[in-house]
Image (cartoon, rainbow, N blue to C red; front, side, top):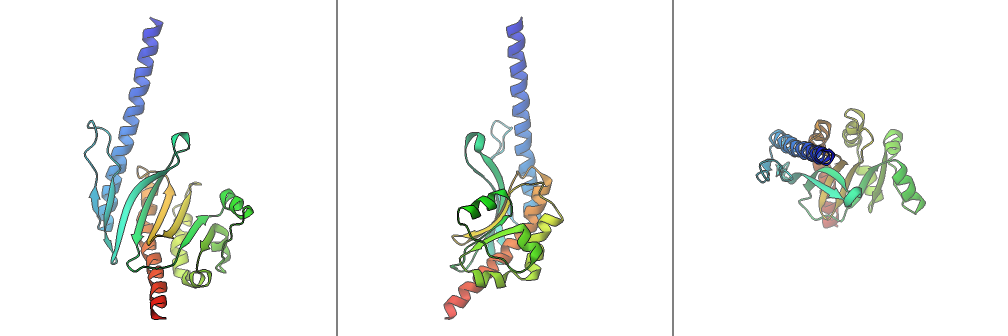
Length: 216
C-alpha cells in the first residue's frame, strides 16, 4: 500500500508541476500577443506541444523605421540557468558605438575590482543607479540627454524591479533592453513595452555617431 501511495504522490506532483509550467507558457504567449498589438508588431509562436506547452512566443516588426523584436532568452544551464525577457531595436546604419548600462550593485563592484571602468554623466542620481561602459565616452556622455535619462530612470522609479537584473546594451548593431524574468509576469511586460521606445532612442544615438563618422 505504501509504495502505491508514494507512486500516486509523485504522479500528482509531476502533474501539478507540468500544469503550472504549461500555464506559464500560455500566459507568456498571451502577454506577448498583447504587447505586439500595443506596439504594432507581428506576433508569432508555434502551436503548443501536446496541446499544453507553447514555444517561446515573440513579436517583430517596424517601429520608428527600425526593426524591433520582443523575445525571451536564457543564459547559463542547469540550476544556473537564468531566464531573461528582452526588446531590441536594430540600428539601421552601421555604427562603431558600443555601450552597456547595468544596474549598480554587487556584480558591478566586483567588475571594478577586476579593472572594469565606468563613465559618469554628471547626473548624481543617474550615476548612482547605472554602471555605464562605452567605447565612445565623450560622445555617449553628451548623448545621454536629460529626457533620455528620465525615460531610463522611470523604468526603475515608476515600475520597480524588485531586485531583478536590468540592462541596456548595444553590440553588433543591435540595441537591447533585457531584464531577468518572464513575459508571464505583467510588470516585466510593462517595462518591455516602455523600453521599446528607449531602445529606439538609443538606436538613434548610434545613428548620429555613424553620421558624424561618415561626414568626416
